[in-house]
Image (cartoon, rainbow, N blue to C red; front, side, top):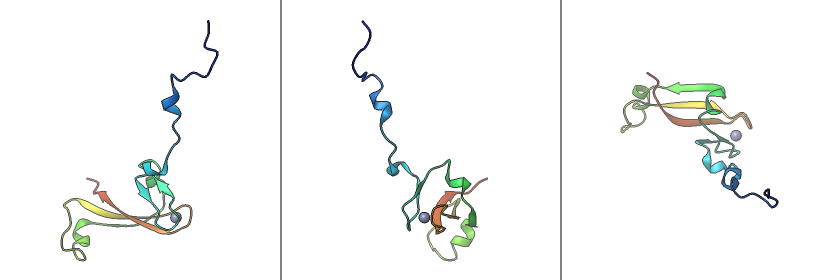
Length: 85
Ligand SMILES: [Zn+2]
């Protein structure tokens, strides 16, 4: 006998992708980006930790601010990133 009805063996793998998985989100149009798609966006500005401290008195070591342009609406998105060594 072969499996005639719907097979539930792999049902959990068909869960749809949800935007809550996105690591980065555009505040203007809510488009989400992850670790794969984020680096593909046009880089606007990268602010080194020492420069951020001019504006923020408390700032974690080795964290820079990266600003990239949203590919959907063109809005700049700023996010904290570990500084590349
Ligand atoms: Zn956007």
